[in-house]
Image (cartoon, rainbow, N blue to C red; front, side, top):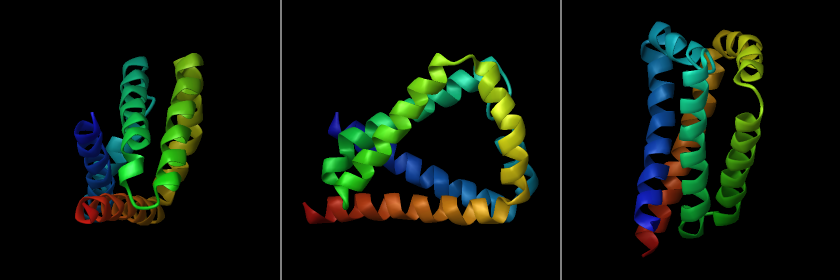
Length: 133
């Protein structure tokens, strides 16, 4: 289970770095991707499945990571907020997305910097864990 969790965590880090690159090189495509979040019930539940997978993987793999407590807390935050989003009607998430997504798109470059920084931190933390063994 630890290896699978590690693979998911690495994929999460690479996905964030990839999103940052997409925003930098193909902003229109990245904007279309961001607009898909919470756009339908299917998109909402797929997003929540992905979040639950990543959050759980972070919780499981965090003891092997650099700054393990930080990543364990981050994983639990993702898991708890995902469960909360699963308990409310998807339309509420959609309405929040109608407000939040245009804000993120207006600040896409800043969003890309944050995604790149978090993705790099995740990958660095995993690499420190792998190299320490």
